Length: 222
Image: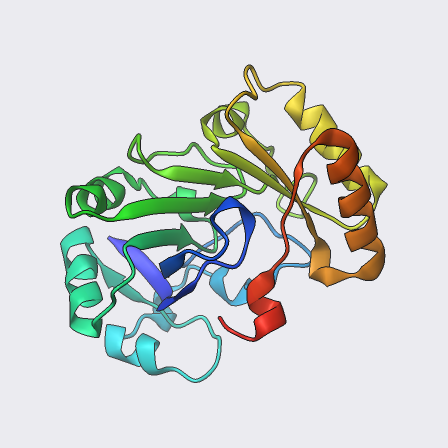
């Protein structure tokens, strides 16, 4: 069963899929411990916060409440809610705590495209057609290493940066990737800070990487 903290329809605001109408499914649970995380309410796995799908859909603020659903029930909820987007982004929390092969396989069989946004600290178990975005979290409080297998599976490596050491960390990780051809490498300034943005722009130009901005925060949508 999947534990779902949020589900909503919006526009993808980050990375190579920016601008794509998307259904976001935010799963509950994450042990990584990023200090700048903007979804800390998804960290805790505690059945005391279990509630109904209707309650989660109607909550007015971010919190730990979540509901459980299997893959077929989740697809039925898409239809019940009248969602029209055909791209599904599975995020968290840390979505790869779950085996996502049943969900992504079902969605692709029903005509959806899928994307996973992961820290790279768990094995990525998903459909072969799923677009995998690894946003590697290095030396975080949880002490979990970024897996080379996750980086190898990634279609996109999107790294949050605030200072030069974060670029250096990414360089070290990329040295372990067997084949970077066909992968998009993005730098994303943390919290849109001016210094971080300048660093990301300069580095992207020098490396021929791509700049990723959190455009949803600029235009005020989820």
